Length: 474
Image (tube, rainbow, N blue to C red; front, side):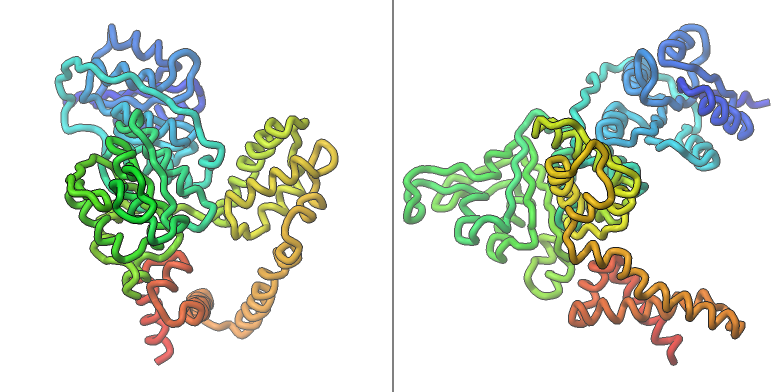
């Protein structure tokens, strides 16, 4: 009879340790449970090597990342799944940098956890030879780059994985969602972390100066060029270069940028010396680049070069559950900087903030918190103080805008139910899709790619829904 596969669960939380171990035993595994890293390391001296280890990150004494480091140093082929309720960039990046097979966010579905263990297990337990590993380094977290919403957890996992890979990344998202923070996190958690991180907003530099800013120039290259200027690509050599608002780059410079990405070399303006650099380019934009390509304003081949991996950032209105966490951080930071007593956000005030659409996203929330920290009366911030700090027109419209269309929808549904209309939900979905798509296409002057972007859909999805809508009509 085949001996069951051995799996270790390491977690200081008895409840988590118990239920996960029980689920794995029910799945046919031989499970050893340990309450901390020290116990697990001690067990290595007297027990056979497990086929897989599942460990928590935060535990008394040595944490899960330190345990991962030691396990990988002694047994580099041993698969380790790291789990944590704190799905931040430092934890996920540290886990993947240390050689973790996967990062499991708490709370998790037991069936999914067991399936993840099954996928991670090798066909046989390999013989392991000791191999030195670099110790883990953890950088400080960014006050903006936090969140527990599913989209943010997925983003943190993606950053942790991508930071270790020498791939170009395109970061997309609305203004104020934190695109530069994501770029900095990708650099900070990468093997290039000790080299420069250079950021350039291409929309903020006049077109006639942007070429020199990117590639540098020689003395006398043009009027006013009195001495050699080293451009951003040379400054970032060995490190990372963020090209923010890449959609605004002039067409001529797009061609030069394409060559640098392809060949890693360029000439300074007015220069004859071929400059070679090793730079990881991270691009960011709030614009629909596919629509710009269709309009002839952005090179398709450059988009393909930049878009090796795309990281879309969710707008704040789609992760309202994170507003309380963000607000707490911003209020604490603002009070410290202003040398004022810290203030707390009352529940009615939080509900008002969560009902707001946040067109300026996280940056707008941060600015509002500075106003509240400075001007809101008392220790606890109330809904009235929030209402006064928010733009007047939007505060009035926050609740009414939704009710303006949901109330008639509810009345229509009631009428259809009374008439016993069959397949009502499917019919309502078709009408909803048709109405939203028609409005988006009108807003975007009939351009499907741009309509898909503003709706947060793929272009193929929009085409499919339009086709489905027309078939239903006929």
